[in-house]
Image (cartoon, rainbow over all chains, first blue to last red; front, side):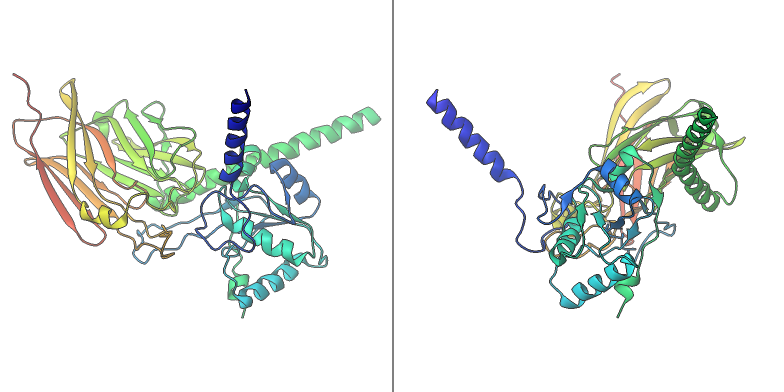
Length: 177
Length: 263
């Protein structure tokens, strides 16, 4: 009996360790892969909550990567990106390197997107198992100037319940000097 | 009066909800119309009405390797087939031109699906173009890094196998397996953080002697190590010759013996 209990505890401890822990800073490893279930400073939300937040005026920030057009791409190249209606798609905003120039550009662009409400709540997302939205959420949560919601289920989880719509990339972030 | 207002409000809400539903469906339809306009020079394919059946998982386990089976009920009247994955950056996965040596009743492909998307199969018949569609839930099939070692994949590139199945009504089922990583240029090497340069299959052609079985234009929406299923109308003992070319201008040719009849 006691051995069974010890074994159960051991298994539980192992299961706990198998979960991905939050890195102390931004994640710089492979961008596709299992993420932590939490993000310190941000609230985790599901599709219904995202829809409600959007209706209440939150900024929807999609940080999905944009597929690079290969140098030798087939002739018929016609990329399309479907996201949560009303979302701003900032490809590249999920990067994890500590480049201070990018950090400043990101902060400045967020201020632009927030318009008249500098404390505008933001929902960050991309796809499932995508570290990009975790990183962008981490940056925003660290700044601490607005409520941050992380939607780990991403576009696919939203699409399970609601309509998605084609969204063009907002390239101003990367183009800014 | 208040009751009437309530009914009005409720019906407005219902209309709004429906408008939003129609929104995604409408946008997906527009995407297909746009693609078809480019692919078929403005000719709009008509519904296949039972000529085409598409069998594919509603939800794919592996987005980089989604099996798609196409059944044609009147294959004799079909000259060519297009397999289109609407939302892939390179939507045309395969364009197959049928030869007299092909039995096209049952065809199969393995494709990459990058996001929730319709796939369309279009056939060219004497009466014009016909189309059928199916929605597939899969995501990340195009950017999925290769599991296997890239260098190892390059060493076996171009190796082929032709596996014979059962004879049925004058034709024999066959599977052509091609070793090729079919790099699409969108896969990031997780160690080097560099995109692996594109190197993908452009054409696959199959002949028995002078008789064409099929010619296929591929692309980056076919999976790595693609597998094609089809039927062959064999004529005599001449070998089957398969030729594959890729975007780096590699050419591979291999001959296969027709199946022994067992007599």
